[in-house]
Length: 496
Ligand code: NAI
Ligand code: MG
Image 1 (cartoon, rainbow, N blue to C red):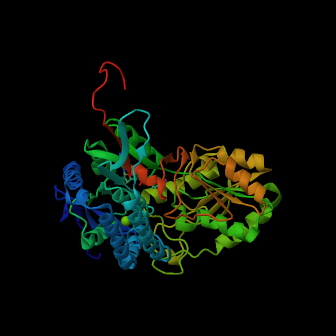
Image 2 (cartoon, rainbow, N blue to C red; image 1 turned 135 degrees about the vertical axis):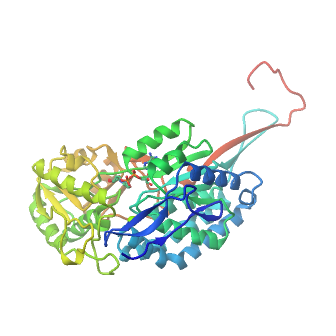
Image 3 (cartoon, rainbow, N blue to C red; image 1 turned 180 degrees about the horizontal axis):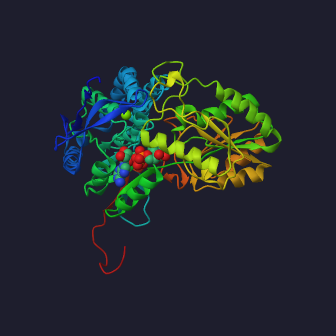
């Protein structure tokens, strides 16, 4: 077996192992072999990282003393440096996570935009002067950072989801302790080399690697952490929300989805077929925005499913390092098993697999953790396969009669992250956009995101938004200052 590549955590500007000296292995999902050795952090490492972040963010520190313009320039310089590192970071991600290099090359370059955008916002964080209703009183507001922000990130898009948190929190003047997923820590540790290279003051950005219970839990509980920004499963999100409540911490929660991708009979069929594919087979279905429920109008159901199956069949599986691979492996073994379990559950519920429905064994898939692109018809929205997040390449096709029924089925889940609508009728598109309970509605497109556009969930898909101008306030708190210019203090026994 090849020797493991060894990685270090970054705490307070130093490259360190875990205080315990322990490590764990990270696997390459295509080879199903361990390839990297990662420090196995625990509470002592969390303490050190939070203390470093806390000190780095105190009034009078180098970071807090920077002008907003200088902070913005540093973020933009960081964005430029990330662009230089993008190919390398993309390759690391593909090795550790199994994401397609074809997608990662582009995605890692795109990270730059968040740092440019929020870098540009740094010197536009303005308070206000309030024309207060009291005589001889000057009243103004300022926006201040919260302090130390814990960024807890999952394995499906490690650097993108980290960046959605890190760029705005830094722009707002906070400091960060990052906990990447135990399945995909490498790209974040390599990313820290870029942080070091551009010269953020030590302790502004720290990473502690390890498992949820060992690192994530003490990080959330740490009294000096002011906010937890989390992306991941709703189960873990709920636990974190509860733990954060003990110290009244701020939270942003970006959780799961069971998003409806809705195709009307007046849609451009070929585009809608591609939209359905990108909704569920891109990233091997391991995305929170997966359009995992395909709602198809009855009148075109059979014809549409035939076309969908025909195109899905052509998906090229194999080595994610090959530019022409279209469906890569599942990132980790528990997820691989979970997807196969859900396929059995769907079969048990009476759904019919018209494509796939098993693990993939073709030569191109080697020893990797591959699941065949799977399409179930005959799905009722009440079935578990339609209600629960599978997080894999498994699509449930559900027929509907008319707009009302599409809205009813579309909204009949606990989640509300995203929805897709395929129609050429503008009235219908706008009614659907209005009535669907989702933080994002895509019309005649799917799986589009931008640094400019707020992203987040309705209902149990989360709290708060990421990206866009306004969400920087989620990393700020407002202070109001009252100054009296009166020559005499009036009656002290009444409210002023
Ligand atoms: P998870 O939600 O448990 O993990 C996300 C992050 O939280 C990881 O860094 C993990 O180490 C950390 N974490 C775990 N327990 C924690 C705790 N008690 N306190 C603080 N941090 C903690 O997701 P996991 O276990 O990787 O995957 C489980 C399932 O979640 C998957 O099968 C998938 O269905 C779903 N999932 C959904 C995501 C989404 O974006 N909607 C992302 C990742 C997973
Ligand atoms: Mg891995």
